[in-house]
Image 1: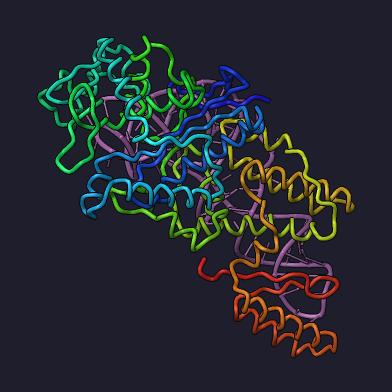
Image 2: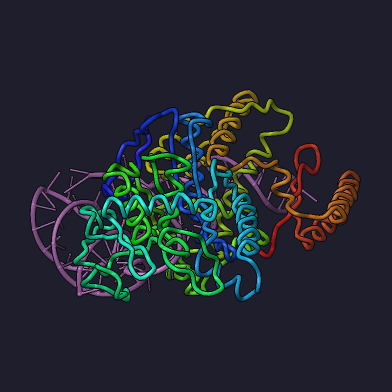
Length: 464
RNA sequence: GGCCUGAUGGCGGAGUGGUUACGCAGCGGAUUGCAAAUCCGUGCACCCCAGUUCGAUUCUGGGUCAGGCCUCCA
């Protein structure tokens, strides 16, 4: 069973064949850390985390190398540092840490490498030098620019020609550019901004060069898969290809390109500039991270996904259903970790068809419920947990999932009410038992009676 | 203006040239002291117009609508 990936460059699904199965490389463009990440920023993280997990399962955990950068030099970071009167590192350290915490809350594994731009300025300067030497870049007016006309394949990824770009040019054409599409590799810093030494004067790197330089340094060229958001196809990834290939005589850069679709708010793209964002940092206080992860994977990664409160609620309920199955099937039985079923692999290997994989999770849940005996139930339960593990779901204790974030005092109170109700039931005082149930419902707790008394209780998060 | 996506039932969301995906919600039944959970059953759909076809939601063309990129952006 082989993985098929929709390759943006080829514009079709292609069978994934790594250059070296013992060393599979994946790179995804990471955040610029000057602010909290919003849930739209989290989509590629979760999507490529799933791919990372799938590759690890297929090729072995140690065979997969995943790089995701931290952009810690940028105009917005500089502006924030100036506004707050601090060094840029004060901003970037803080938000890089928050970013990693927030993504971990969504069940994303840490990437193998998390290179930072400021730690690789030397590599960038070297690469710019190579590009100038090869005739693909030129210094002008304190800047160094990439000469797009020197690269015949420029525009291949995004499907546009240099003529197209000039025709629809919304970009302001600087006088020092030979061609309007030429982009900055190095530029002078503005007063108050951080500066680095270079053969072309003090300044700082352009945005695109960092990924090219760090991919080469950390993963080595060419890489197997390069991923990111759909909006990075142009210009960011187009420019990365131009830089990396031209610095190496046109050699291949990445074998597969994957791009995730956008999250929308009321059908409009969620973006910082539009201001219609929901921060991950806030959302994880309102709903379990796992439910947010479920929501992000509930649509195919290339399709748009409209982010609504209802989506979160439905995601939570879907997980309730699966955790409910695990909860009932779990007590006192052999907790064997099973094999990931082929049906799950089949779905995920088909260009990460997560909605189909989720349908298979429900099919597995049904197998658990309908198992003819304890042994069969334990096996089915193990398969469901294994499938969940591959996808980053269902690893919590089911009781903990349903009991939620209740504090110790509340827990004590709930348990004492349950005890009181058990006494009333034992005495067949149904009126009293029902009164206590009503009290608990009022507090937001559902009580589930089993054959031997109250089997479990659930906190119903009303805010969801 | 150039380039590119998408349009499926109350909601989310797959898929297919002819047979109910799946989940949530609804309805009926079983079960339950009550309830929940669970199980069984069930209603509801494929943007519009033409074409190809024995047959199209699925293929082709046109249209309408929505969205994205071309500027920082996941």
